[in-house]
Amino acid sequence: MNRGAVAGFDPNPPRAVWRRWGTAPLLWSAALLLALTFGMTSLRPLFAALYPALDRPVYMQDSFWSLVEAHLLIVSVSSAAAVVIGMLAGIGVTRRAGYEFRSLVETVVAVGQTFPPVAVLAIAAPLIGFGVKPALLALTLYGVLPVLQGTIAGIESVPFSAREIAEGVGMRAWQILLRVELPLAAPVIVGGIRTSVIINIGTATIASTVGAKTLGSPIIIGLSGFNTAYVIQGAVLVALLAIVVDLAFEQFARYLGRWRMGASASDS
Amino acid sequence: MIEFHQVSKQFDHRTVVDQLTLNIAEGEFTVLIGTSGSGKSTTLKMINRLIEHDTGHIRFAGEEIRCFKPAEIRRRMGYAIQSIGLFPHWTVEQNIATVPSLLKWPRARIRERVTELLGLLNLDPELFRDRYPHQLSGGQQQRVGVARALAADPEVLLMDEPFGALDPVTRAALQLEIARIHELSKRTIVLVTHDIDEALSLADRIVLLDQGRVVQQGAPAAFLTDPVNDFVRDFVGRSDIGIKLLSLETVSRYARPGEMPQGELRGEPISAHLSLRAALSAFVSRRVDTLAVIDGQGQPAGVLHFADLLRREPA
Image 1 (cartoon, rainbow over the protein chains, first blue to last red):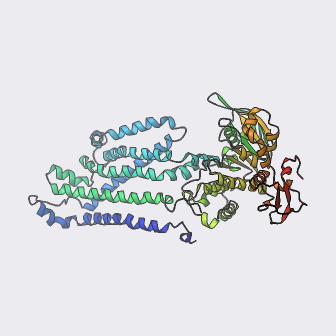
Image 2 (image 1 turned 90 degrees about the horizontal axis):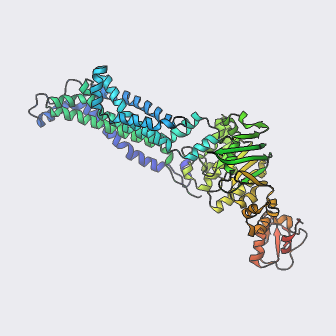
């Protein structure tokens, strides 16, 4: 059907504008990230000129691509765990039966975030060993709070009337959750996940202090070896990675809230 | 169809519905009316088990409602509320199809039903089917809400102040629609309102509740001619009981059909479908004592005399 032809209701022009302005920064920053990941070694003359005192002006222990990969892997696993825990807890405490546990859960999770990740690493490393494991634990603990808060806020933002009707027309509890509450809460939940993931991308760099390979490795080594060029190389890539992921989430959130777009009410 | 027997409900030790006995007949348009806190909404919500009653029995189609699963009984009853509660992330079509898709109707049948209902509620299907609720006016949203309540051909239609939030013009239009739908389908309808005029114009039977008890129930006219006590008299409005009585009858039943208009009757003839209240207004505003009447096809249908308003029995 030619929906666009209906008078007063034409969703296409605004969406085309969104797409042009929305995806362009994402594409550019992703391209820049890839170019720097694979082309950092070619910038050797630049870093040599900037820091003539350094013997090795470009980080060469690992390829930057393998660092990006390892970094993304740690962030994905810990964020996935944080999303599962945060969403389950958020859904749980917004059910009638779980309501009493809400303040308890919120407090526990908030306490989890008040521990600096460095402290968690310092405590965890002697207990469960060095490497990726303590990093995953610290990042997961750190990432739960924004997801939990987003889930609770999102579910609470669902209009009461929609819930009353959902119940009144005979939806079962799980149907209300899956068809009404979660879709309506999705933009807010995704906002929480976005915050959590972005925080984790930055925080994952310090996992290199306990021996996990991440984009933090050149930063940590650079800091301890007075090699500013290494620090810059690691930091720029982490920052770009965070920007790319953030822009991708923005696109996704827009996609989830697409029903909000289009012309508003008109008496016709 | 729905029987209440000695039903009570308490919230926090406060009795909201008190020993309520009520019989809602099949095909009847029942209006539950009362002030806020009278228990009318609670009574309605006990029918589809959104609120569970404490004591007594509620029977639906002859069976105690606790024998049904809540979700099942609700799917057999349409439900519309004042705040409408359209799902904002679903299109008009998806909203109307809520219950049919819960009942797993085939796609083609759902689409057909949506088209039919949009037509019934005077919304152009091609224009509105794919819109989202925020793209509709309040009146259009409530039309969709009513269409959703009717979608799966429910045995009973429950409406909780469905027109309360609408402007007077839209409200009047939707009241006409719902009266027409009841006329067409002879469906059992239970509607909650605090608006006596809405009750008088829609109901086959009015149930006036106060503090969880029935004060009076019966035909609309009985509330005007035989109010049981001062509460009822105040509720229907002492000063304009006569006017409200006129609003219950139509011109067609009181006009003198054989008579031809004599001489010059001032102004346009009035339609036989109008209420006597509208006729009274015409008498007064035109300063005449006879009005020419035309039927739906525009043909002369006799004359209405001012004195006819006072007759007890139709012509």
